[in-house]
Image 1 (cartoon, rainbow, N blue to C red):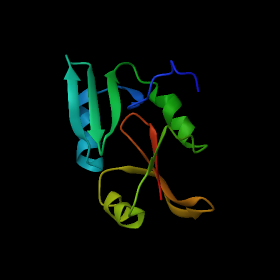
Image 2 (image 1 turned 60 degrees about the vertical axis):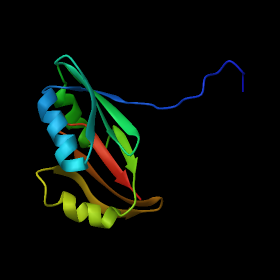
Image 3 (image 1 turned 30 degrees about the horizontal axis):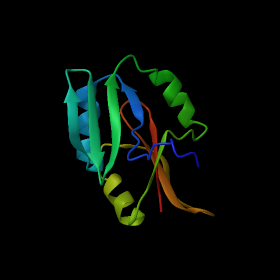
Length: 124
C-alpha cells in the first residue's frame, strides 16, 4: 500500500430523494437511524451504530428505481444480527417488502424499499 493513501474513517452512500422529510421519517421511525446533521432544507445525514447515509433532495427517478426491484437490484446491504426478530418487526410497519425473509447459501436475507424505491437488503 502506498504511504500517501489516507485511512478511510467512514463512508456514506448518497441517496437522492423526492421528499427529504418523508425520507428522514422513514429511516428514523422504521430503521432506528438518527439525524446526524442537516444542511439547509435539501441535505441531511443520518446515522446508526456509526454508519451513515446522506440524503439529498432532488428529482428522484422513482420509475427506474421501481423497475430495478423486479430484478432484485440492491442499493444498500446492511449486515445485521437478529434478522428473524427484525423481520417480524418490519412486517408490522408501513414498509414495502420486496423480498420476504429467505435462507440463501450465504445467509438469511430480506429486502425492503424506501419511499424513493431504493432497495435495502438485510443479511445475517
